[in-house]
Length: 455
Image (tube, rainbow, N blue to C red; front, side):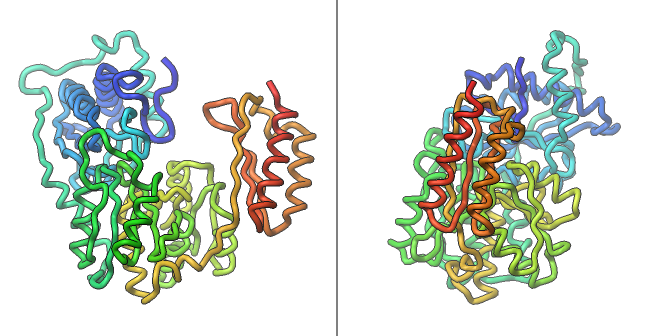
C-alpha cells in the first residue's frame, strides 16, 4: 500500500482508488488509533460525518459510518455541509472526531476523506502515520477489538446542525453588520455550500443571486466554482451586482469578482482582510502568513503597509502550522484558502466572503477599490517534466542561471523553482513587471532545468 494521506486527507477516484472497503477500513483504523492515543478518554466517543453532494459520497458515507459504529463510536450524520462546517461543529459540539467526505475542487469522479480531531483541527502527521500503519496491518479485519451488544456505536441524523454553522458564520462579524444594499452573485459550484452560503449572506441583508446551486450528484465543480469563473463574471455584469463570490465544491476556498467582472484572487482577498484586521487591532503581531507562491505584488503591498509576511510551503496545512506556531490570526493562499484563526480552524470560503463584504460596508469602498491595495505582477508557471527534481537546489550550473535571472529581474521580479511532491516535475515560476519579460525568463529557466536535470 502506498502513502494514503496527502496534504489534505485521503483522495482518489471513487470506487477505484477510493473504495467502500478502503473507507470502512480507514474509519475503523482511525477509531482504533485515536482510542489507543487517549483521544477519547473514558467516555463513549462521538463522531460527526458530513459530505459534499457527489454521488459517490453516498456509499462512502455509509462505509465510513459503518466502520466508526463497528468500532463503538456513536455517529451523527450531518448530511451535505461544507468542510469548514464539519470542522466548526466538531469543536462546537465537543465531538471526538469529525469526518468530511469530499474531494474539494476536484472533478466529480474523485472523492476524499478528511479527519478532524477533537476541537476541529486536522489530525497531526503522527496520527495519520499511525492510521496508515494500522491500515497496513494484515490483521486489520480481525486484529482490532470490536464491541458487541449495547457497546456498538449508534447512528443518527442531525442535518439541522447546519443552522448552528450558519449562525456561527453570521456571529463572526461581531457587532451586527448589515449587508443591506449589497447585491452579490454567489457561485456555489453545485457543491456543499449551496444552502449555507446564500442563507448566511441573506441573514445579513444582502441581495443574493444564486448560480450553480442545484447539485444533482454529478455536476459538482462542472464548469463552475472557483476553478471556472467565466459564468460568475457574466452573471455579475448581467445582474449589475456589486460583486461575485466563487466557492469550490466543499467551500473551503473563496475567490471573488468585482462589479466590472475582474477577478479578485486569494492574494488580493488576503491583503484586504489583513489591512482590515490591522486597522481594528486584530492582526496578531501585524503579520500575515502566505505561501511561497503568493504574488510578489502581495509581498510589496504588505511591506508598504507595515505588515510582515511569514511564507510557507504550498498547502493550507503548512499555512495553518505556521499560524499556530507563531500565534498569528490570518493566513492563506492565492487559490482562495483563507484561514481566520479567530473564527475557524481551517479555510472557510463563506466566512471569508462575509468578512470581505463587511469590509466593503465598513469602508464604503467598492471591491475594486479595496483590491487596488496591491498590484498583481504578471506570473508565469512552466512545468518541466521527466527531470531529476532532486537536483533542483544542488546543480551548480542551474543555480548560476537562476542567480543571473534574479539579478536581471531585481526587486521588480521573482524566480521560484519548486520540485513536485509526487511527480518527476520541476515547476518554474517567474514574476516580472511585464508578461513578456516573465515569459522570457521562465522559458529560459525551463530550458536550463530540462538540460541540466534530464533523466
